[in-house]
Image (tube, rainbow, N blue to C red; front, side, top):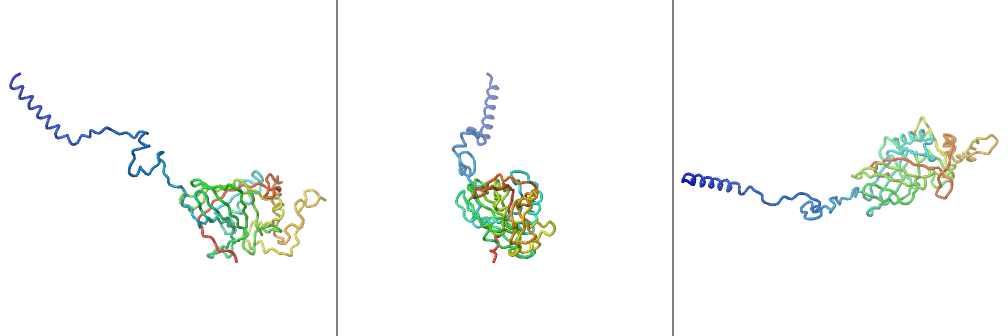
Length: 317
């Protein structure tokens, strides 16, 4: 090899050494780590260390539910009656919607206690005590109160044991339903009720509520009268129950036969009220496919509802 060739090789080697030195601190020689499944179960740090092995969070959805929270129904619609799409549903649902919007029909849910995934709920009705334009115009009716223990899984809730509901509408002096001899005055009693719903993630509302099953006993229907005023929907149009009102005998489908439903119907109410059983039957004959809380015949019922955060009114005087 010539001297000239030696000089060329030496210069090339020196150039390679310079290039290698310049890049020495920029090369990462550590092995590559890919996010394989084995890494999810171990070797985590920082924020990832707070995650369980399956990668899910431990935040309790709707854990914000707490004692003292109150919700008021802002919708209540009958879904089925007497086991199906009874014709009266189309008449009652618009009336109930107007009553809720006009503060004539008021269902309140109050959280009484919370213990883990269980909480106790109070269901109570309120009456309109003043014109709807005035503040604090509602008052709760202690006679309508019932309590139920709810089970919660995330934001889903349902009751494990049946409960009762009492449907009161109107003012304390002007009830839209008038009862004769029933346990809860001037209320439609719904018994053997199971319901479920979804709590909003921030606990500000109850959504997708469903009364999956419930019943109104035949004896309760016979002892309940209702005021359906299609024009003036204010309770004052129903008048005041009159203890001296003798009532009327319900009509029979067959001439010469005794009354089909009751004698002295709506006794102690007034002439504006109509027997509830007779009213429902006028839209289609009832089958009584359910049982009441005493085992007697009853009309089956299901309904949908929603509720928004509210303030619980003071008790009626």
